[in-house]
Amino acid sequence: MVTIKSERELNLMREAGKIVADSLLLVEQNIRPGISTGELDEIVQKHMKKVGARPSFLGYNGFPAAICTSINDELVHGIPSHSRILEDGDIISVDIGAEYKGYHGDSAKTFAVGDISDTARRLMQVTKDSLTKGIAAARPGGRLTDISYAIQTHIESNGFSVVRDYTGHGIGQSMHEDPQILNYGPPGRGIKLRPGMALAIEPMVVVGSYQVKELNNGWTVVSADGSLCAHFEHTIGIYEHGTEILTRQ
Ligand code: MG
Ligand code: MG
Image (cartoon, rainbow, N blue to C red):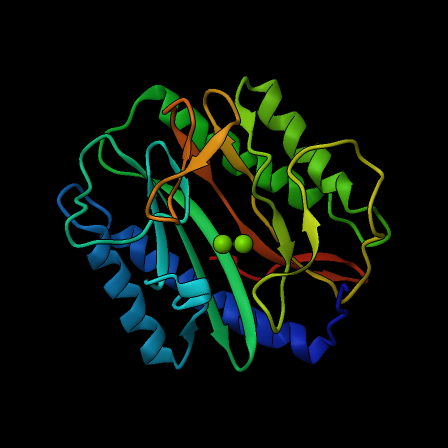
């Protein structure tokens, strides 16, 4: 069931979204060769505690950390660790969710660590732009898969692959709500987008083939061919007049 939020609820989601955006900014300011992903997790945990928010991912289906940190060929759900040290040339996708006053925000971004390859830089830009295009395609009165189509066409026209096995989602009092938002497929299908909906749109992109697999730790998802992955995500609210990014920095 797709829930319709009141203006009061969307306002609370904007507050949760701000906490997520600030957490991502803190991560960005601390990313450098030599820092561990465990330290990045601690920084976010500390910030959320300070502002009275709860990390949405901590304990979610047993996930052991506040944030997901996925490096290079890792796509999503990487587990932060004090023994995982960032190196010059890495790219790292950081996914953060916060629950505040009963409402969730969810956002992800891929960052460069030091000097990265041209391919990595292009992958990050294309993924980021595909999110922008997906958000632009989310219009009150439009259809859900207008978003999917906009994302897929941008990614594939730039020669990269869009992951099939993971999707965007509705969001609100739960981190994952209906509808599921595919990042591929024809436009003009699915539910009609209405004011009061809140969506987490999150293209996941691979340089090579779109096949992915889960590692033995039961969490980390990597590209099957070992090529680089990127992930950008925003939570948006749909209003009469258009959309607003609730996790904007
Ligand atoms: Mg997320
Ligand atoms: Mg999400």
